[in-house]
Length: 225
Length: 225
DNA sequence: TCTTAAAGTTTGTCGAACCTAACTATTGAA
DNA sequence: TTCAATAGTTAGGTTCGACAAACTTTAAGA
Image (cartoon, rainbow over all chains, first blue to last red; front, side, top):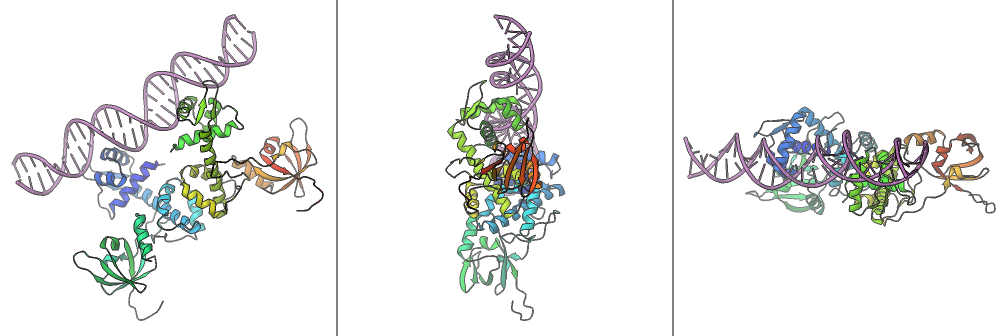
């Protein structure tokens, strides 16, 4: 039974390592709001426990065992977010912080009850895929909005959930999961992306666009719906 | 912000002190599963923080400040129990342990959302009164079943929630909140109480009877319902 | 009153998880 | 190649909450 703190370190490494990039002390420290010596100490411990491999001065990488912990936490986090959103009608910009705490303390039994209550869902309110109970981590759907070509239309399938401010910004734009967006133009030199969303035009910055993933509509014949 | 551990000590003292009885080191230690020196140390700290008053060798008593913490926890606990019971349909013998953890970590905002979602309820699934947000602790309803006179009929309004085994025992008897029980006979020498419950007769031990509270039906004229 | 068992406290330790200060390794620019 | 600047680690300290061992107080019975 890893402690709350250990779980948080593993989760952070998981988030930072993306597709198997080594993760560095400094980045873990910055991301968690602790000082580097705390990270060094904990990393040594996590390596001894087999959660990650550590090459001194060269960063860390989660082992299978560590990844399993991280994916389980993600499953918990996303199910809790969906549960709070569905039952208490809490908006998507307010569920993350509660879930952040609850993911560490809710029993497996309760999580599975929630999973069944929600109808064994596949996605959380931000469109993130919910990992399986077996630790199977499905791929993200779609592609980032900033990689969509001009003239293409996409359906919003996923948005980043870490920054409530960003989610409120999207809400203000009336952009939600399922929204259709047409990319009209990429402004040059890192400028904004010009979009059409539900008959309104808008410009969206690159940083924001990168946090939105869309499914490109394939033009396979002409079939509505 | 008291720590989890501090909250647990305060809660334990609250439960043990009943109607302002001094609570002793030994009893706190036994109830919490820690050793006496741990209690001595923590009690000193709690007294310094103003949560309780401590006369060395003579036990402790919560201050107003300590009682407030305890009652807030009770409110959280009972709302969480009711929430789990209502939304996830978790039976009354399985909600206590999850609530025990969650009461310490769920934000006030979330608790108030739950409170409103549940329709600002007055009682939890075991019939316990839910304290007000203002720290107001309502009295228990009814009287313990073992104090009911022979021949009297009562309506079950509250049962102890600490022991899941006991709750499963009640479930087996088909005894629930709202059940009507007729006390037929008190067996002598601490023997069982003979009851009639929904056209079945049963004997219930004194220890169990003390954990069940009933409202005595007053014979005010003859009015059904 | 004296004695002793039970209850309570004090003292010193330990592990977790953090910190600061001081030291070491890596790296990229001069 | 050398040497800062940056990154990482080690050493040593703090706080929190638990513990065991040793000591003190209380209270009950001889």
